[in-house]
Image (cartoon, rainbow, N blue to C red; front, side, top):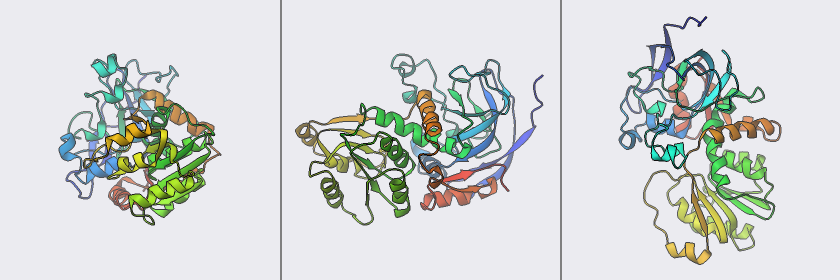
Length: 375
């Protein structure tokens, strides 16, 4: 017998750019075939949520309010659409199970069908970019409910993994893992530089540290985030506040790598000029992966530097459900190795969502946590 669904639920809704969110009551609808209705357990706030809220992404993505933010979500299954009783690796799902899920690919375009890379699907359903006026209304994580789309990969969260951490990993860690994977492996012979000390850069630091490289260097700011990087395995941190010029930072990397530069560099910052700087930090015959630079101004560089150094350069955009799986497994296997609480900030209720966004925007939080059940 199907459970009786609530008639409505609350959500913190963006009704105007860069203005306080409004608490609204919206209808709760039964999930269609292949979909799940979930009660949001925890949502963590991403920089992308901040940029949707402040209007920075409005023109690029054609977004119009009202929207419900949040794409780093752990939800507990409330109701099943027909055929949605298992996760993406065929494990049975039951009411109350915690799940994470990916943006919904179309599964019929060239990228989905031929390239087998749904993260490049041009027709993906990305919930927090959809107007809340469109059914089923609860498209994001800033609400009491959300929906797992019919074609979205979904995974049951391991019992050992905290919901807030699993939510954070469903974006930042699942981005870092395939990016570093594109490099073809890291081992004890490598010197590694991670550009960026935001959530993606910090998760990348933990993943790189788990491979025990010869030297692990993190470049970023503010100081509190560099402390997390050191706690998670960075041998050296280079503050962009203390070393404000590109030349200074490149010189520091050279000092820490016997004058050669790093054999592996990962760009996870998205900062202006980060790619140009990273090219200068890579050693001859080195490998460079670019995962953070998704927008912003052009970054002119001397293309001959790539040739002269014989560099291998990779781009990495998004991730598919396999990376979500590996992210959850990384957390499960390293429950005690890393102090994950250093990443997670304060927990906020829906009425405090605007405060949480402002604290994220001011870098007062690394990962603010939203709990719809909190007062």
